[in-house]
Length: 245
Image 1 (tube, rainbow, N blue to C red):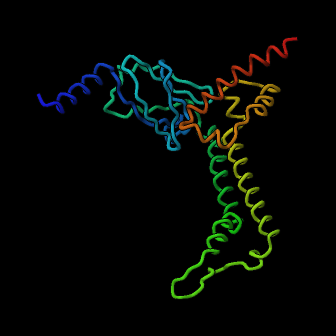
Image 2 (cartoon, rainbow, N blue to C red; image 1 turned 180 degrees about the vertical axis):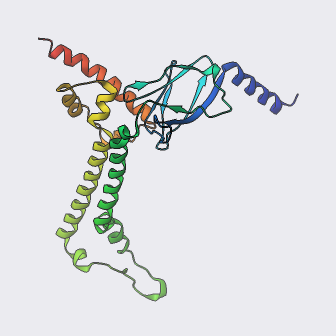
Image 3 (cartoon, one colour; image 1 turned 30 degrees about the vertical axis):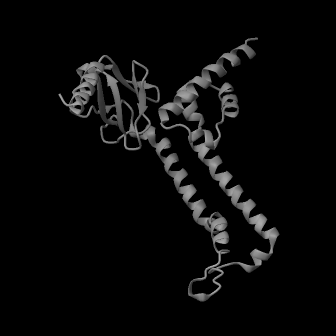
């Protein structure tokens, strides 16, 4: 038997032995008309994912596993993977009304609109570093000096204005990062994931507020929610000790 064919057969037999299957589908609200983003898709083995902005999910599980869905504290029964037809999408309808999702969806859209508006309003500032420095380059095409179209001679000779413009640009970028953190790290989300109540919730929000760079390390919302949940467990233990009296 050729080695390549043998390798393929071994790989297929390994997949069969592991009993891994891919399950995918869409999660809808009670009316089955609106797709639901941000729904937790969980397995008894501990694996999990979250539906995307279109309500779609995709997960690979063992045939010995079971699957369930949860959103805003409302969950479903567990569905044994071995009973699912993996050739067809496994769609799900949760007992959640569309208006329950409004605040999440509108907030997500407003953040992007605000960011875009901010960029358009201060376009010259955001592009300042690139356009100003690029225009400093000499262009010898056509035999001319070619200092660049739109070069601001006043800015070039005014070091103070140059530094103020760069400082303003940096401040705007930091404000955008803060708005992004506010968009991702909300009290509503943290309360839903952790179950924390006031005043512990306020303290947790202040002490565990992530940085913009740290938020970029999470490849999926599931990993992000897991971080919040595990951090809350550690926080709750210390909170109980400090407020036991």
